[in-house]
Image (cartoon, rainbow, N blue to C red):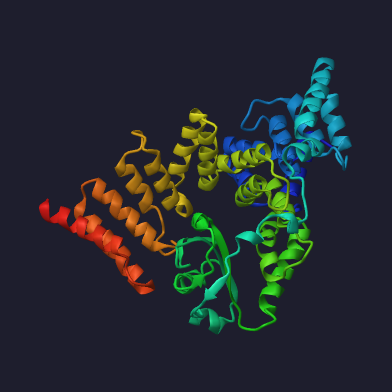
Length: 446
């Protein structure tokens, strides 16, 4: 069989027979559309975290000279790496190898050895895979908030009529009365269906406060469920389907299975970190980010900062703002300012709505002349207010920035919004009323 014919057949095979994911599909799409340079970049990134289809297609592109200078030596090495265990392409590899001269054959063997040392399954397992531990050993339960006074949330009418069930999970601090502050949405299912009603309810709840008041800044977690029946049959059915796809190798299903299975159908031995790793290996940026966080926190695995940073860089390179922001903070902690500023600038450019408020606060606290008030205000505007868990904090911070920037009318407007939201929860604190009066006075004097 001619090499060109074999390439065409296997390229089609890899785009149709294997379970692909967004990044791999994008790379194939770029290739088919003639955007070969972009396809090469995507295949290279995936190949270096062990994606066999990407390794094969990368070899094909080197062989064809598509998007890169033709290099049969690298082509043979990458294709051989992709076929190391199954060895289904021996005839194809022999055909390529026989067309190399003696020097090229030696180079091909040497290059394969270097690739195998760095990017083989064994090497990547050692460099990137977490060392798992039973999930019950992870110190998470100590952060669960204990409610003392609750109010039942409104069940969204449309969701109830459609039989939709789900949950929202939050992280927050507690004031001295046990009322949640700085509420942040950690996760929700399905989508944001129950987020708004969850926030409206939980912001009025009262939780048990620690005896040691110095612990008031501690971050607590709580999950609020919305169920139409005690058996939660609908969600269990959905997770069952997701599990089947995950086990068949679908990376998107692996990611959702990791996130939602323990919430809907808890199993004592289930470890989400294992499934996040499977998904991350196939290029799902969200899985790479969450796997990195688990590695940093020792969630379901041993803490490993080096591996965490490796996964953060993978997802940050795919323009995931959360990963870029996390990398910036990590590099600031070790005083590597060159890398910290590089990733911080990337995070700003990502326009990631999920981190807009936190990123704006961080830039303000950084107090660096490189980041003007105007830039910080624009960053804050990126936040989607319909998804902001604690709008009081957002409006207060916006008012403060406008005031510092001399935009007193906008400062008053934003503080009024903050007070209005707080009024729906409980009495507006004196400091908030005093702040509004300060902004109003500045506006009057201007």
